[in-house]
Amino acid sequence: MVLGASFDAVPDQAAFAAKFSFPFRLLADVDKQVAIAYKAAASPADAWPRRITYLIGPDGRIEQAIETKDPAGQAAAMLDLVKNT
Image 1 (tube, rainbow, N blue to C red):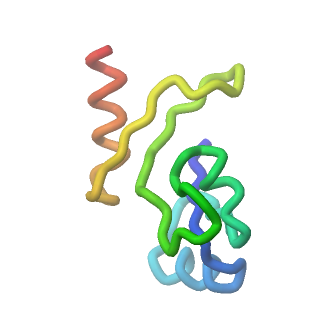
Image 2 (image 1 turned 90 degrees about the horizontal axis):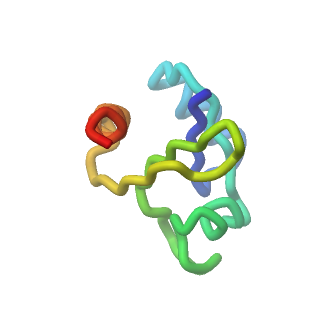
Image 3 (image 1 turned 120 degrees about the vertical axis):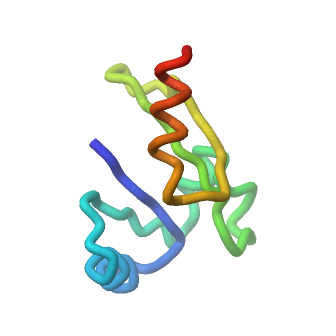
């Protein structure tokens, strides 16, 4: 399952997902608690989350994590990392 998250509100997330035909769900992390828990933000004062892709195993633990500035390349970068590990 693929999920995305940002600080935007639900209506903004829905419009963004529809505009770009996202094939996965987007989570509205308006209180920034998910970003803080996953170290994509240091505090609620952060204006933007870091772009991090996580591979979470069946047990719920993070197996791999990568940060990239290229949103279009995050999935490919994670697949490359997993293949070479």
